[in-house]
Image (cartoon, rainbow, N blue to C red; front, side, top):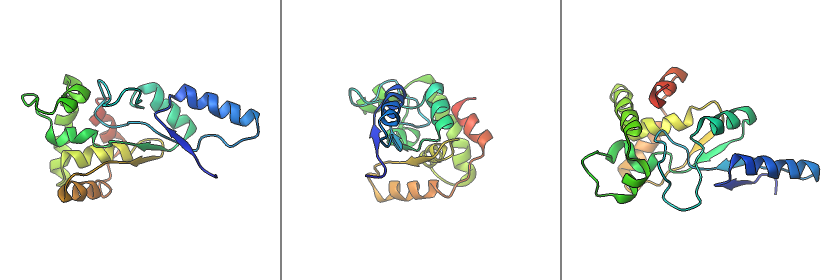
Length: 168
C-alpha cells in the first residue's frame, strides 16, 4: 500500500497516528475524508461522522497540505433545495438549517447568477478552491445534478470570493 487515509478521523487522531508511523518507520496518512462544505453542519447525518469546517481544521490541513476528500461537497444540495419555510427534509433541516448557512446560501446565489450555474455548483467550487488540496465528492440523484457538478470544475473563484462566501 503506497497511499492510505481515513474517513471521519479527528485531526488530533491523524497527528497521533502519523507520529506513531514516523516512530516505527511506517508510512503515515496520505489523505483524509471528512465532511467539508460551504454549509457548516449543525450535526452530521450519521453518529460519529466528523467535519473539517472549523478554523483549526482548515489551518491544520493548510499547514500539512494533506489532501481532503470532502464528502457531501454540495451539503446535501442545501444551496439549491433549502428554504426556511420548507421543513419536509428532516435530515437537511437537522444538519444544515440555521441563519449562518442561509446567509451563505444567499451569498452563493450572486456568483451563481454571474457564472450561469446553480448555487450548488458554487458550493462545490468553494470546496475546490481551498488553500489545501481538495476533491469534491458528491452523490447526484439526477442527470441535471451531475451536469451541475461538472460545471463546478469550470468556475474559478478567487480567494476573495471564497472568503466572502464563507462570511469572512
